[in-house]
Image (cartoon, rainbow, N blue to C red; front, side, top):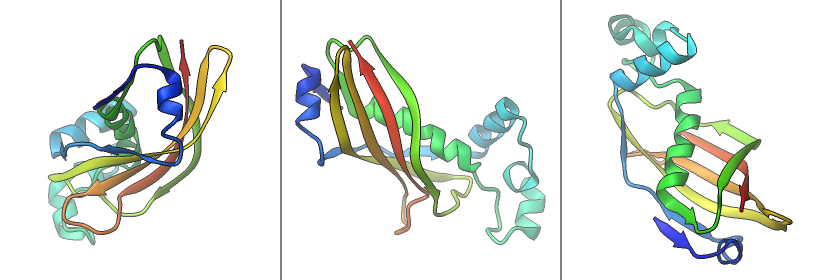
Length: 151
C-alpha cells in the first residue's frame, strides 16, 4: 500500500500507476456467497456439475459483478490518503468484462490514476482498475472508476 500524506500528494500521481495488489482467490465459496447476496443463482456460477458438463469453461465462473466489486478491495490495498474522512463511489465511466474468472482462479488489481481534480473539500479522481487473472494475458475486467475523496 502507498500512503499519501495529503490529497495533493495523490494528485501528483495523475497519469501514473498506483500499483498492483497481491493475489486474491476467487473460489467456489466466494462465488456462492456472492450469489446468495445478490440472488443471482445462474447455473454457470453455482452448479459445479452442470458447469463441468455443459459450460464452455468446463467449470463454474465468477459473476462479472463479483469481479467488478473486487475493485473496492484492490483500491483499499493500494491507496490510503491521510486526512480523508471518506471515499465516495461516484460511479463508473467505462467497464469491460473481457475474460471469465473460473472458480479457483487468483486475481489481482492493477490501478492507474487517469484523472484527478481538486474540489473544495477533497478531490474527484478516475482510477482505471485492471483485474488480472493469474496465468492469463487478457484481463478479466477493465473499469474506469470515479471516486470522491472527502476531507
